[in-house]
Image (cartoon, rainbow, N blue to C red):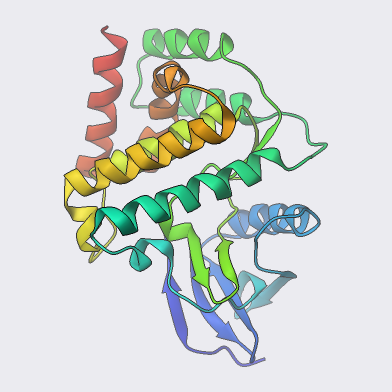
Length: 261
């Protein structure tokens, strides 16, 4: 089949139209394609708001995944820079993430082992710091919740049929607390996508969105925010090597401040 127009560019892949009703996500490296393909096949059988997965294909020497095409903007671009819009969408996001965490699965927990591997493989963290972080991680709950682990407004499409969650490359199973902590960390980061919308550029609006999101999630799960600080150190440590330049330095600085407390 002939590839269609380019409709999206991400850190791991480019997305093109594929026929009349589908898209193809062409990855920069084969391992990411296979990994997301396995995850997509798994979640395709669960009751989640996700695009239908049609399979892995090879196109012009690159591995790709064919998905159902979902029309609509992502939540990132759907949000207006007003407290009403921010609050409304933050609550939608919290409810969607809660839905993910409540889905029954029979997968062995792997989130803590994945974080441990990232920490051990990082050249940005000293051996002494690694030991402290891993000891902290061992004391945290394993959990058995499905975790998107890259859950943010640009991975939610606002379609005519409701919100749809995309980009399941990082799918893990573990504590829902870790998933929430990572999302909150990403919302608060200084790292911004190209041509970021106004609400994301203005820090006070972004902080308001984060507060509304956390408040709604805590209400849904009848919990408090105490776990955020407990999970933040290993969450920051796992994030360092995903970032570049000043944004990597931002994560390192935040990590070192917490380690010195």
